[in-house]
Image (cartoon, rainbow, N blue to C red; front, side, top):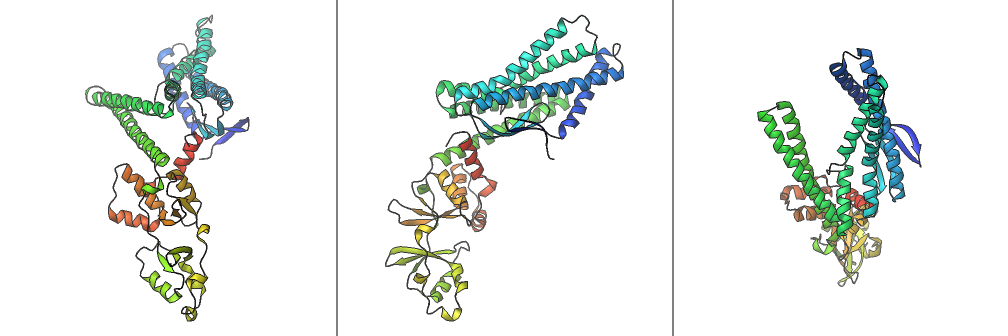
Length: 407
């Protein structure tokens, strides 16, 4: 579903998702039920619904106001935000560039919980010093204060992408000087907390309440899997960052002499084993002089095949997208994605061609580094399709690393 823009500040659209209205109704209904159960002798059903709706609505308003201030601090710390979409109790930010300093990330992470606590303190102070605690407005203010306090505490829990998690890894980054140490430590904390929730959920499942035990077990299992995925993601980033093209197994170049006619070219193409090998590299007494595309056969009449030589139709090697054997893997993938077919030529320091790599070669190399060895049937199928295996979106990972300043 499309989100709806509610306003625009500093060139950033602030949107709400349509599901917000469903959650608003459910939250209003839940609060009105609480009012009926706890204060049914004070408020009638209509007043309970008013309290429930206004509490939910103003809670959303406070979340939006906190996010505006949080955005202001983020922009001052060099963050580039594309848009912000609210999902009732929080917001999802589309970010083009992240903050590049530990101190800046600490400021960004702490501002939202502090705003929640400040709002809670002011609202609870107003409700406590009110002359009458039975007024609808005071009831709403009191509930808003409690909910803001709860949100502030929730945001400080050191898990995932919550402010508490970002704060923890930024503090470690600041004192250790290593961003990766902060990320690794946070992931270990997430794994530990998720494991505790999973164990507690299993105990609840069999000894106390099956419903809550099932939910806790599910959340714990989800957290454990997320931590494992984050570990794998971190390993992939390191492989992209530090591995070189020279570590890959290259696809050998198909050679053809410059004075070969088109009949010999056609015979080579018919006998090829790999359907993706569409390029042949032209040599002259062992020297590389250029390359040709097999589709060139379609441009020349069969009657002229004996009289036409590949050397007359060759293209210069420097027109083929190429990388050097000592280039980093992430740079190679960027070059690869610039091509239409998904092939790049690998050269040594002397500009001599060594071989070709494609998406499947890079993908299989990364999987092997991770300890995953695919069956040969799947590898051959992927080689034919020239795709990154298992849906690994390596270009997106590289873009994310650039946004965070890791590259």
